[in-house]
Image (tube, rainbow, N blue to C red; front, side, top):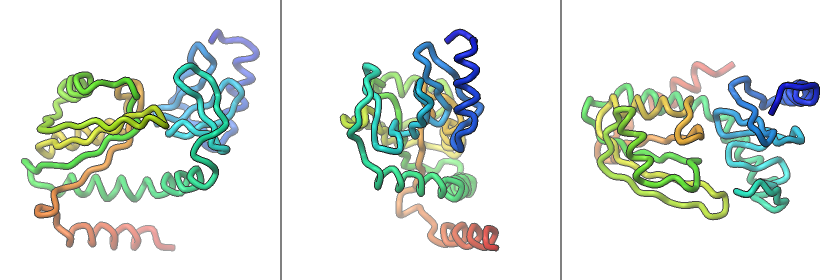
Length: 203
């Protein structure tokens, strides 16, 4: 979209929104797309990282807006989840940091493009030095997104994968969740993380 008076007014409008982030880009269709997958449509309405506005409406792959969606209740739940993101990142980063060098991590990547193929994902991960030992894709027909379940080996691979949450991966910023197989998981560590978080954030 060319820089003109209408564009400037649009940008000034969305900058006032609480969910505006300066890391986004304005595309040819007039959508302001942010790195976490959320966006503002040409009318200045905010859509969360799952592609829904506050009424549960969404845009399909042809750029058509639909009113039906996940609804206000689920939207509110996602907002609550977003508020807990800082804690989740702390816990997962600590989990990676305290893992043994050759630990095998169970990983879930969410909010990837619906048309992404297994080969594309594997090639992109390989470019970033991430050692994948197993991969499976789950297609979400309703939201037009893909979830990827992985097994990756090594602490360095986990760190590299974790960094993707603040980068573009196949055009989106994925949500990434780490776990360690139950027989390798240290419950004392997780208890310490929880206790530390609530102690340091208490008023």
